[in-house]
Image (spheres, rainbow, N blue to C red):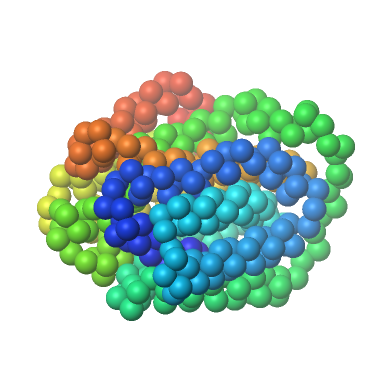
Length: 380
């Protein structure tokens, strides 16, 4: 995650410097979304049939090679907007396999009663990297994108080495024969469980509408009048709030009214997005993004815990793959949506519309998924 966040800052600033276009910032998100969407069903089937740790390690090796290629292109002077988009397409394909596999691996390492705490600690580790990554990436970008990409390459390879130290006995998974039915089993399971469907789809639309990450380079340079270091701070701010909240949730797991809590947290996420859209102060923007991140991690921990606890191990790869398509890819598709709406309506109206849309979705989902709203306990 440290490498991924550093690379994200560099790619965003790099492609905006090359094009000066919000559309291309959105296309970076689309390039990562398309392979995730296309490969979702195959990814889940692979994660349920083969060694999950091996799949994750292979993905991180390819991510390291992708970052190394970005560094090579930048150093050699042949980097272009097209080459960046192609490489990010490859990264999106790799993430399609890595995300669900890592999600399905976690419940093999801890008992069900500890999954909510494990999810919170996992989130805190990820958010720590999300704080340091953008900040370090923004500072290193002063030496040029090559430095950021090269260090990201090394960090991806280090992550692969660390995974080798995981020692556990993977539960036996009966490999189903490859068929259309087995490929679609994850979708069928989610459709038949309104609590999981409601949680996943709520997060999908919240991130899709409320995601403003792709437009942060424009806010940093043109609205808040700062440089790469300011962009790094803006990208880190949500992670600061998320880290603080994830530590709190790890020490004091949610015990009751988890459904209602999820809806409230997503509504706060939308409200913080609106405040950020209107801000012309760096400090106010950082504050809004911090609150946004804290609210977001609450819904993330609840969703992740519900999905993992209520899904049998033999199905976790496929269900996690669909979950990743809904949630993980919504980040990239949300970036594309933000870029397009910014080109149509302007940057500030685009982010404000997203925040308002998020609050509207919360109200609608409370009526559409009453089972989720009235869910009291993660383990119940």
